[in-house]
Length: 125
Image (tube, rainbow, N blue to C red):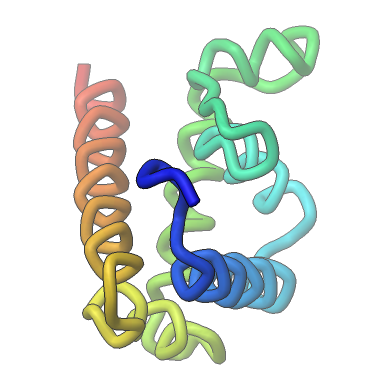
C-alpha cells in the first residue's frame, strides 16, 4: 500500500462522517439549502464554488445576497443545539472519531472557519 493511500480505518471513518453529514442535512435543511451548501463546500464534486459561480449557474435567477443568506441560514441550522444530528457532527469536530481522521476533522473545521471568515468578509464589504 502506498504511503499516500489512506488507511482503511480512515476511509471507514470518513464514510461515517459523510453519512452523518448527509443525515443531518436531510433532516435539518430544505433541498434548496442542501444544494447551496453542496455547491459552496464542494461536497459532491470536491471543488467548492464561489457565490458568484452559484449565481451564474442559476442563470442569474438567484442573487449573490440570496446565496450568502441561504448558506448562513443552513450552517446556523446545522449548528443549532436543537438539531437532532448536531451532537453527531460535533463528535467529529471535537476529535471523538480518533486517529488521523480526527486530525482531518480538525483541518476541516479550520478550513470551514476560514471559509466562514471569507464569507463574512464578503458580506461586510
